[in-house]
Image (tube, rainbow, N blue to C red):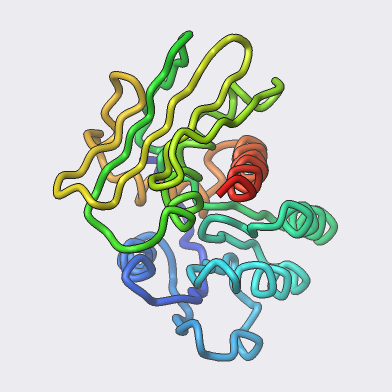
Length: 241
């Protein structure tokens, strides 16, 4: 971990179960100026911070991001930035116009797994949870979408639904096939891309991502590409379900 010379000041909007994990780490690596819940008026929050972390429900992301980007504040947003590709592009344009940074949660990247796709590929994720097949598209598939982004984004691809009862489909591109299967009725946890187990990794990927974002340790361009690709492919998949 790089030596951090000066703590950044941050504001946090959203303090649910996932938000609490962020807040705990942020308190160690930044100066947290305020934390508010999803039902508090965020427009009353001070824009005089280095970053605002938006950890609220998906449907609120666009309007909160837009508000702080217009105020000239760097924004970290929980995924997806927006389920609407046009809105997401608008936010990136707004960030550029106001010369601030916009970063979207891509925590799986920070597990540092080398994902390679072959002629036939299998991505499977299982857990015990609540929700609908439709909701799994943005909750689970979104992560796998950005993980394979670099190998798929510049090609034409087709999506074929294999089952309407489960989130089970395949994507074909460049004579390669990627089979996806997601279940939230399994008592055991599983997340594998071919032979790679994403449930086993070194370190704390959430902490790595937060420090990376706060202190600009690398380029942000890849995150933008992955974010827009994941939104695009999730949108196409949702039309079929």
